[in-house]
Image: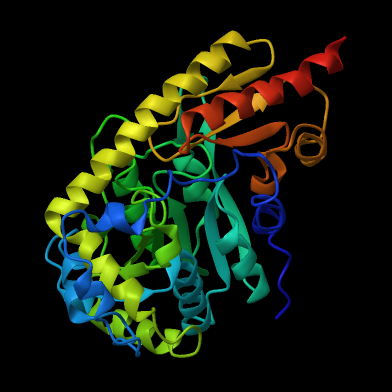
Length: 376
């Protein structure tokens, strides 16, 4: 097993706490503990014993998570350390369980974790693309039909999508489910941005359309709680969830006790509604800033407006490699963006717009300051 370096995670880890303007972050402004707790007594949190929680997540937490999936119970959920562990163990299980099926198909552009894991485990990894039709990013369903086979163990999607902010609707999800079902493949649906929709309409879950689905999610993006490192996998198959719990015995073993406790607070109905409202308000306000900036710099950028998530993918007109551009922005302007090449999208940059508005404005101004002189 040989892992390729995860370039996006490496550049963010090295620079996000160094630069003045971090526009690479893909979530919203993180909540403070006091903001999360609201009127709830802090005493109950301070009284927690710092032992091990139940390793697949407490029953109370898994019950709250299960309420997001029709017909699910706590036994349809296993809790992980962030969405990253959820994606890792889900991909690992599928590749190892179905050794006669050595193909993995992943929707691109995408967060490249599953792409890298699949290759490391020896799978043949193939793309099916979201296509830019000029007004929307649309999944190429025909490409998926042509790529899938009886050797495909897994079709991986991200909805809402990272890095484009596109959202697939009911018809597209049903089509993907039917194509996977025709060959008996599993679907891994990364839904970490569900709840971060700009129009306020919750993205449908693949959980509702297919029995052989593994839905991954976390509190990191739509909830603004990345520091809790709480993620989960949901599936209609309780047996598969039980098996995935066994996989996490070999990775992180368990979430932290405080993370489990605070996740319960976050997912109680009134708090969850409050948090999602906060997220959508931040995104609507900040997208208007980015939209105005893009409009004023139309000679430099093309961008399809995102429908969900705290990110957008912009194509730029200058003849410069996206990684080189990002390193120049780091060195010359103390700004961090995500290079399009880290999503297999050259001549693009991913802009995170979920944080402080003034910070966002100044960071975007600095990007233009660097790019405009290249045309002189």
